[in-house]
Length: 321
Image (cartoon, rainbow, N blue to C red; front, side, top):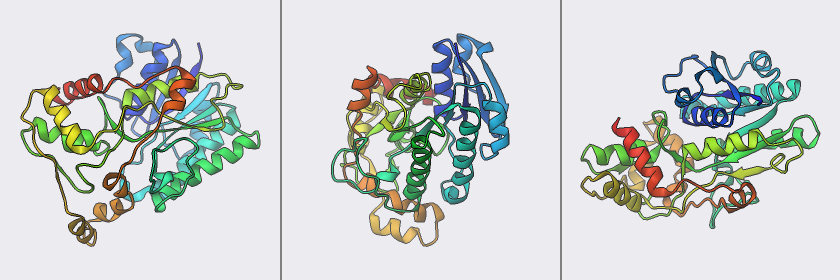
C-alpha cells in the first residue's frame, strides 16, 4: 500500500482517488475549498482518503502535503477558461517544485490543445504545434516538466485525453454533458456554439482518465510509464449528430438534430462575449476531424476504454439524478 496526493476534486480527481482506493492505497485529496460532496470511494473504504484545502499554486503547501507520498496527480482545472494565462503557470511551478523536493512522482492530467490543428489521428509522438496561447501554455508546461525529468530532477508523465464526459463532471467542463445530453433530456434540440455536426470527434470518459492515472501513479520508477506522454483509452470518434442519436436511443427520448451557431456569427459574438473570443483558438477541434489514437496506451498497459454505450448509459443516469 502506498500514499498519493491528488490535486483537484473535479471529476478526474475524484475518479483517480476512487481508483487508487480500490487498489488498496491511501490518498490526500486537495482542493481549493476543501469541500468534496461526491465521494465515490466511501462505499468501499471511507477512511482511506483525507480531504484537505490547499492552493495548488502554493509550493510550500504542496510540498508539505506531498511529503511521504509516492506520487502527485495534478488534476487541477482552473475555474475560468478566460484566465489560463495567469492560473496555470503558478500551479505548474508549484507541482514541479513539490515533486522535486519530496521525490514524489508527478502525473500531469493534460489535454490535446498542444497538438494544434491536425490532419490525422493524434498519437503520442504527434508534434506539439499549438494553434494559440492556451495550447502554448500546456505545451510549455510539458516541456519544462520533461526537461526536469531528463535532467534527473523529477519523474514525470502526462496523460492526454479529449473532451470529457461521464458522471461527476463539473459544470462547464463537458460539451457532451452540458450541451448535448442535458438538452436532449430536457426535450430540446442541442445547440452548440462552434463546430460542425458531422465532424468526427473523440470523447473521453472521465472514469477512464482516473483509471489510467491510478495505474501510472503506482508504476515503479523504472517503468517505461515515465518521461513521456500517454493517451487515455478513448472509444472510436463520434460526431455531434451520432452522439445525439446514441443518447436519444439509450435514454429513450425523442431524437433531435444538433444545431450549430454559424461560424460568422460566432466570430462576431467574440467581439462582445469574452468566452466566444477565447473559444476561437480551439474551434478547429470541432470543425474538422479531431481524433485521439490511444492504441499504444491500451497495448502497453493492457487496458481499454469503457464501452461507449456503457459509458453513455452511466452518464445519462448520473445527469438524471
